[in-house]
Length: 151
Image (cartoon, rainbow, N blue to C red; front, top):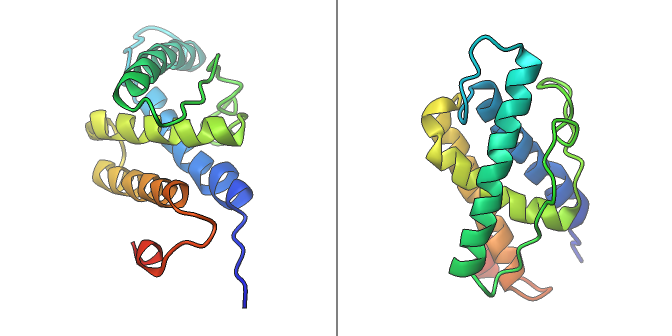
């Protein structure tokens, strides 16, 4: 029996994007980057998304220096529309390769701002598991060894 996993749709465009959205929206709504007092929710969201983008661009540079052999697929822009317009109705509008890089960023942000997240420890654990899965699938051939599957 052959088991073929559709990683593009099941992981990159599925669970990875769900995780990224959950983390980034929680941090935006928690005003992790900027406490926009006296502003509307929409203004506060946009300000925090721009601060998130700035941190993301800085993070890309650090990743390229610290992990030069790992491909880094950068988003050129990060807008409220890309995150789905609202906290409750969201769909991440980016490509799979960008998603895989952004997963690592979201995981790092979950760790950095865990005190701002609902169930921060669980969010960090989930992110670590997803990044580990990504690392395993990227470091093995088409036929993943049993030891790697068990990880």
